[in-house]
Image (cartoon, one colour):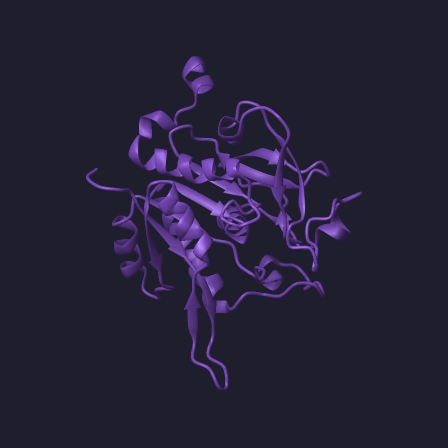
Length: 253
């Protein structure tokens, strides 16, 4: 590889309204984090043609699947819509599902964040909890409509990639979601939970493929300095694939 790794980033989408045109936009935290980690970010528009999308993805070294201020459509998940659920625009969800499916097929290094983590899990065969407050016993507060700096403790599974990223000690992450991963897809394993059992991170069971999903937002201004290691590990996977095999996996081989 010559030059910096090129990392694709999907974005938000708002359909045309009565007095406004359709609009795509991108949270600066995502591309600033990729840049700070040593990558070259490039923004992916919601392409409608699969051939165009595949050509685009083949020009990239890695992918960040971003979160969204809206939710996956529960009807498409076979669920009855909860009053607190705000489905994302159809074009955004359709594109994100296609993007996730194709990136997995290409075995690209993937970092999926927030609703991006949820979308990736669903596309790969996993399931979601629509509303934590009603489906988890003794739930923590995972979203506060007033407090944007809400944080909670993270229980990391020893020996996982996330454990390798964050290391020992108490870890707190920001939190702003009401949907969550329920059953992880067969190709993933849980690598971190909240104290109430809500899945906060998962990763590929294939040690040679960097694919990590996190429910918190390492790109956000409320993130800690440690969170930058999530992006740094993605960049490492793009530049040194052999180095992405964890030490414990080498010993077990």
